Image 1 (cartoon, rainbow, N blue to C red):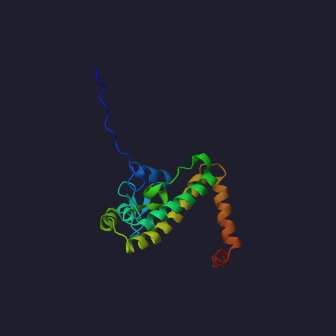
Image 2: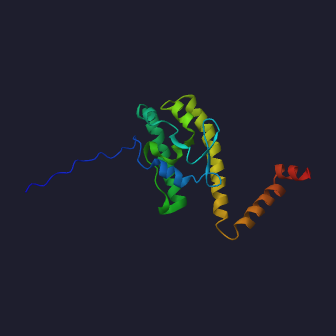
Length: 176
C-alpha cells in the first residue's frame, strides 16, 4: 500500500492575477445605483454584466518593471496601515498587483485595446479612475445612509448645509 502523492498546485504570487480579483472589486464597488459602472478609459456607462474589471497598471507591465514593484509594495503598506486603522479586522489587506486601488471598471473595447500596455493608458486610467473612485465613494455613502432610518434626513441636512454654507451653494441659492 503506497500512498499516492497529490501534485502541488502553484499558488499565484503577488505579481500574478488572483482568482478572486473580480469578486473583490465587486464587493468594494457596488456600482452607481447598484448596477452602473463607468469605463475609466473612455467614460462609457456600462452595466455590471458588460463591465470588465481591469488591472489599471497591467500585470505584465509590473512584472517587467522593478520600480512598479516598489510602488505597489509601498502603496500596499500605506493602504493596509490606514485600512486597518479605519476598518480594523474587517479590512482585507492589499497585496501585489491585485490591490483594490489597481482594479478599475472598463468596457470590453477599452480593456481589449489597452491589453498590457502602459503609457497613456495609465494616465487615462488615473484620471478616469479618480472620477470613478469619487463617484463610487459618494454612491456608497448614499447607499449606507439609506440603510438607516435617519439616513434621508442626514442626506437632506448635508445638502442644505452645502447650499447654505459654501460659496458655490450660496451662488446657486441666489439664482432662485
